[in-house]
Each structure stands twice: as C-alpha cells, then as structure tokens.
Length: 340
Image (cartoon, rainbow, N blue to C red; front, side):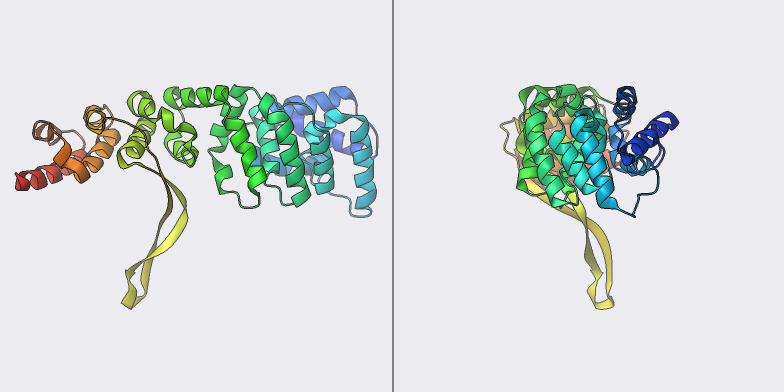
C-alpha cells in the first residue's frame, strides 16, 4: 500500500534510471518508459500529490543539478521532442519548463485514475504557463477519457479541486467539461448509489457545488446504499439548499471576555427539484439508518404544520432505538401538542 512518501521500489528504480538517461541527453529504452508509465498507472489517484514529490525526486536522481539547469532542461526537452511517449511521465517533472513542454506534447489519453489526476493537478500548477498548457491539453484529451476512469479519479480526489485557488476560469471549466459528459454523469450517479465502502456523503456535498447531480437527488435520497449519501441528498431536497464547508471562521462565545471558538464556514447554493416533501419525509422517517431519520426530523421541525400524519408517526419515533431521534420526536410532540 502506498504511504504518503513511498513509491513501489521497482517503480522508483525505473524512474531513477529514466532520470539518469534524460540528464545525460540519452533517449531511454522504450521498455523502460513503458515500465514507468505502467507503474504510474497502478498508483492510487488519492495519493497523487504526495506521490508526485517522490516521483519528481526520483526523476531528478534525488538531487536536481544546479550547475547548469538551462542545459539540463534543453537536454530533457530534446529527448522529449524525439520521444513523445515520455510526456506521460514528464508532466510530473520538477522543472516547470519541462512540465509545460510535456503537456504540449502529450497526446495519450490517460488510461488510469492516477494519470488523469496527474494531469488534473497541473491545472492548478504554481506556474502560469503550465496551467495554460494543462488547459489546452485537457481540451484535447478530456472528452476521450473513459467514463470509469473519470469517475474513479473524481471520487478519489473527493472534489478537492473545488478549493484550488491558483487556477482561473479556463482551467476550472476543464473539470466541468470532464464531468458534464452524459456517460460520466450516469456512472458518477451509479457510484454514489451503489458504493458502500467509502465516505461518499462529504464527497457528494463537494459535487453539489454545481447543478451536475441535482436531477439524481430524489433517487439518491431513496435508493443509495450508503446512509450518508441518502441523508445528504435528503437534506438538500428538504431544505432546498446545497451546503459545503469552505474552512473555518471564529465565532464569539463571550465578546466582553474575548472568548471565541472556531466554527465551520459554509457556502450555499439554492437547489430547486420538484418533489413531494411529505412523501419524501415519510419514507425517510422509516429509513433503516438513524442519521436519515434524524435528518428528516430536523427538516420536519421547521414545517410540521404541513405534515398530515404527524400525530401517527411521532409516538413511533419516541420509541426509536436512537436517542437523538427520540429527542427530536419529543421536541415535535411538545411543539405540535401545544399548538393543537
């Protein structure tokens, strides 16, 4: 298993050998380049940022030559010009000029989530020319990426690109281009509906920053295998808002004493989906997961006057196995009973 800074030994050795050839201005054997690409294809996309550190160190033989970097750059780019398949590896090189040249030369559609993630993070590269080259490369290749590769990459990165700050609208639009394809969207919805071994509730919130999955929310609220996905979809539908965390802010506890505390900073987007709120709430109140029942009760606390079967369902929920559900049911019983 790949840890934060560990590469498979065989891949690391291949990358070192490749880097030595490049620094010498020698075209590496095709089989060596193919082995490096195959090794990178096998890495987990979720580790793309930390793995990139070891990859570029291995390519530069752990010590970037500082005697004449311009000469080294010309050698590497000269080898790249005669061997375009190197671009798949060199988009992870330490030198920004080399990364830019590799992106301009890249013509191979990413075949694995890791290689797609390696291209995606170049959209947020610290060097502006590299970001621009990455956007042009994405425009050429993203429409050809296999839907399952795009979905696996998106779920592995968990929407983290939404928080990137270096990129401009042209780079951000590349991600919309990737996920707006109907085949990708269908597979993405299917993964949210069927996967049960990953923390998808938070990931779904990141994807709901745009209307991409709005139409699938009623289905996810009713049928998703993971309770956190059902609860997230239900909350968005009942509250009419998608919310996601953007960081933290300080909230006063006692301003006169100078006491404050960190609280989540949230962003919101209105979501308008035509649903039968009462039917949706009733189905959620019978859900097998306590977090879904709790989500429905929190929404019901704001609009219980419009819920026709409140008197029947509250006594049942007051005997619920979940203490939190019982407390919300007691809250509704007190307020609804006081208004009769």
